Image (cartoon, rainbow, N blue to C red; front, side):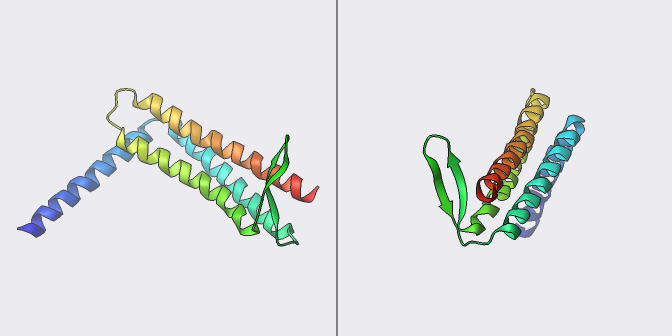
Length: 137
């Protein structure tokens, strides 16, 4: 009896996930946003790889402030946190969209959340470019 109840709940859960993701992909603009997010993620990972390959010291300037100068120096492995943060923002926005797929303003939410994730990827790429310029120019 308990096994069939578990199976029924699991099947219901999987069908709700399928419905929520199909609602996300019914909006045509979501494909454009996902392509932009993928492009910016690939650019960010390429930048991190290039910075890691070019690095010859054991410290890396991770942040520079115009008022105070260098304010974050760390291990070169910490540079990988930047693209992982971009993936985290994307996954968080997808999960929020999957939860809110029955909202009456769902199309607006898709534009808002996926557009924000794409914009975050762009600014992430700019931040990695500035890290490269600070460390190697």
